[in-house]
Picture 1 (spheres, one colour):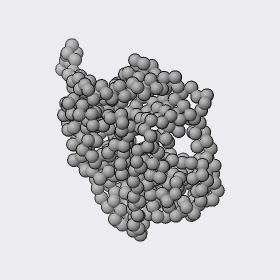
Picture 2 (cartoon, rainbow, N blue to C red; picture 1 turned 90 degrees about the vertical axis):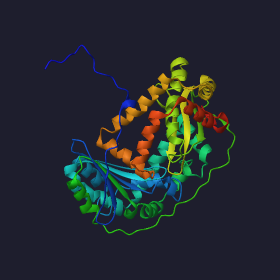
Picture 3 (cartoon, rainbow, N blue to C red; picture 1 turned 120 degrees about the vertical axis):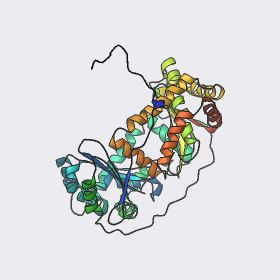
Picture 4 (cartoon, rainbow, N blue to C red; picture 1 turned 60 degrees about the vertical axis):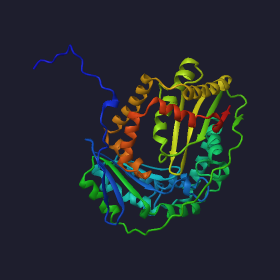
Length: 427
């Protein structure tokens, strides 16, 4: 059969495709622990996530959540930190522990064939971590040193300032590490947080990669055999502060040549009906390289190497943030241009070509995400941890495809009110 190469294949926009989230397998281990898994891919690699309610929201004192996550794998009742690291290196595996605002996660990357060797060690870390005193002191010294270095950087200080203004320093989303909070960490405070918030009975397990019944059985043989002791975790309540002075300027380095700009406002999380439509508007405004902010402030004005607008959804609220770094002599000019682009979106609807480009960008990214087991797992994990089902994914796709320029203009007028944004510059 002769192929006619004189006629190029048809080019389709991403908006024309159908999108279906690959299925998620849901089961319970023998002891009742929930397991969600995706079997896909051809490489013999597995990712397993253990998710706990152990983020900053739950910590009894500042800096404890990050310190607990940072030290947890540095020694158990049976193995030292060196022995744990040597075992991970021997099997070519990686184990990461991290604490976010709401949850913490323990993530294992491994070849599937090594799971029987590695899973008992992970269980040991999750149930028998000892937090050796010398490891706690090392962590504190390193954390203090990192903080002192970071505090010299205007962008780091700006991130602290904007979060604190939006949520208040007492709120988990506005809290940030200070020298005194790091110094106040004790082994006892970490052990207490670990025992209450890393109770295995409160874990949710996600597994993806080249996963099948054998891998599920391997996980069940270790984690499904562990006796659970349910323990309720009290969820603290926090309120947002009254709005303070909206426009603020900070001098962090009198000799600094760069200024960090942050514009932020409170914005609903994924459960609000405006969230998904706002994803489209935010992308057009400052969410990708071809955005309005990039075209104006980077390409036309040359004030910055990059500027970005983002929606930051958390389980218990969220925010909208515009951030960039510029030369100190053009910071105020850059701020004016940001507001100018907001005003334009409020007054003039986007044209069809620009809106189609944004839709194709968003949907094209989803096409890429649906092609690998780890990204598929991440999609499902994000949905489930936020309290959604597959229906939300389908709803998002429909909004991305059908939203109009008129609807985006109405959103802009609702949310791009300059008087609702904190505006800070740190030099």
